[in-house]
Amino acid sequence: MAGKEISAAVIQRLPRYYRYLTELLESGVERISSKELSERMQVTASQIRQDLNNFGGFGQQGYGYNIEFLHTEIGKILGLDKEYNMIIVGGGNIGQALAHYGDFRNLGFHVRAIFDIDPELFGRKIGEVQIRPMGEMEEFVKNNQVDIGVVAVQKGVASEVAGQMVALGIKALWNFAPIDLTVGKDVIVENVLLSESLMKVSYCLQDRDE
Amino acid sequence: MAGKEISAAVIQRLPRYYRYLTELLESGVERISSKELSERMQVTASQIRQDLNNFGGFGQQGYGYNIEFLHTEIGKILGLDKEYNMIIVGGGNIGQALAHYGDFRNLGFHVRAIFDIDPELFGRKIGEVQIRPMGEMEEFVKNNQVDIGVVAVQKGVASEVAGQMVALGIKALWNFAPIDLTVGKDVIVENVLLSESLMKVSYCLQDRDE
DNA sequence: TAGATTGTTAATCGATTAACAATC
DNA sequence: TAGATTGTTAATCGATTAACAATC
Image (cartoon, rainbow over all chains, first blue to last red; front, side, top):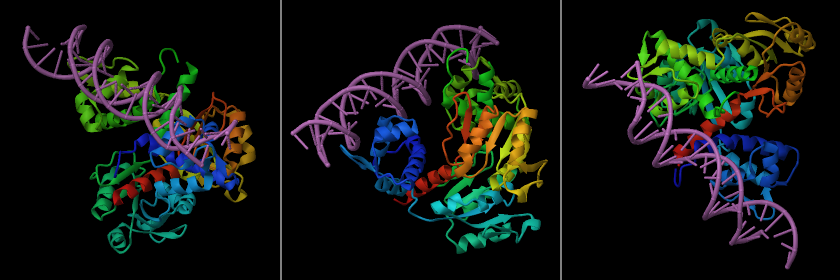
């Protein structure tokens, strides 16, 4: 928050750069020019250079960008050099799927607990963690550093759950409920709106027919 | 595709309007002005009017917008007046979670089958549908109208699966693998990039500390 | 050095916001 | 009618692209 504000559009693109760089790194390529990367990613070379220069000069004239270095730097910018502890509220389909999902772990995001109100689910093990009674959340959050709270409950209780997590000091929410959570502006809310994503598909499908 | 192209930014916002209108409708409100809606949604009234007027004049001077009418019209624009059949490839965590998930059904999106290569999963019932052997996909798609193919397999096989679905004539893919699928430009690809969503959270979390 | 390619400034393009005449 | 609020045009703002001097 020191200098000029980075636009949301730029931040949105960073993970994609990171993904491409990870792939290039894995395939053993050493360097890449903005032009070549732009062709692979289907964006303009200008945009890549502009985006990167928001954070510093990572390239070298006449050479391009060192992939390993740039990968590391973008990782740092995204905060992927740190580890994050998450708790999930909601042990239903989505909560369980997220707890199982391995890709996050590799990026440093760890699910430490799942909470639910359904006694049927208590004790059930999802991946490495057990589903616990909702009543234990407070104690858990007080005893553990929790960075991200995942809202994986149904719409009707999402606000309440979000409020509880924020009250316990959790500073970021990853929300899967189709609702705009109202929280203090020091709390980060990232929404995953699956229905809205599908609606974009149906919108586009319709266009074809006309 | 008749007149001027509607920008992606506008389309992106339509589902959110639809969501707010659904809530207003459920709460029994009859009409709303762009000003009042703008306050609820935290956008400008100007933007709402501009967005809507891309598709026609749905309001009335001095009155505002009739909620039931506008809800229906935006629903039509989004193609929600139709029903869509989906198949899921990948009976793992995400595939199962999506098959269970009820919200899509209410919007007209129906999961008709799940395919996987793991014989352990064959026959397992997820919600209303069974997991079937991948080999049966071709026959299924030929015998049933399939509008949307869901890619819920791991990254390594996502391209192959997508290719198979496109080859069978499926015109829209809902992709959960962290990869940019390469398909003909008459095929719609909508990506749900969970890891990238999480990275935005970690980026923002970092900003706080500085 | 000569060629390549960055970092960065300037130009363009598009999207958002403001303003207001039209009109219910 | 008078007041309210749209639809729409014009002004502003920001993001993307182009261009090029700097420099490896």
